[in-house]
Length: 114
Length: 115
Image (cartoon, rainbow over all chains, first blue to last red; front, side):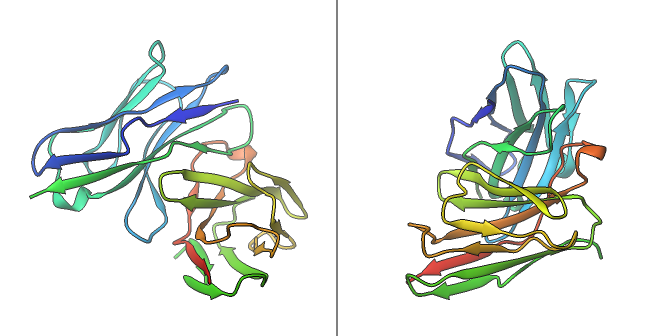
């Protein structure tokens, strides 16, 4: 079975400061990893994904994430945040050899302080 | 534009009533999913379907039912047996195992409040 841990439920950051949202996963097999963003009362939108290849993955809106197999982590980073980045962020994992059923973390609410 | 349409966006029901949430997609995706979202708990899988006329229980299927009679449609019924039905429900689709990129496409969600 797979699981995802997002230790930080809320992260406040000043505008234009850098941010890192942490994600750790547990799996006995290789994995696909994802970050999704959710704006209030909306569905989820894919930010970026790691399937294979380069461990540094770039996504939309200036976000990037690094896959670290030894630490079983997939932390999300942005060098300079904007007010529009205020949202909830979900890390998710799936089994590359199974169906596309995703297991989600509990989410991190990112609040940008002007 | 291609996408996933969920309706209604907001729904209020009395305790003991069954309600059905609609989910339609025009992405020609094989697989469809229903997730439930509660504050602080992330998304939990209720049911999923990888092909027409077939579906499987997810992690929290008790008190819910689904059907998949058409590729485009995957309605969810919240029955009176569901003990705590007030939540935000999200429908998603994906290309299916034939194109396993792992990416899900989500609808805008339906917020159900049971009074």
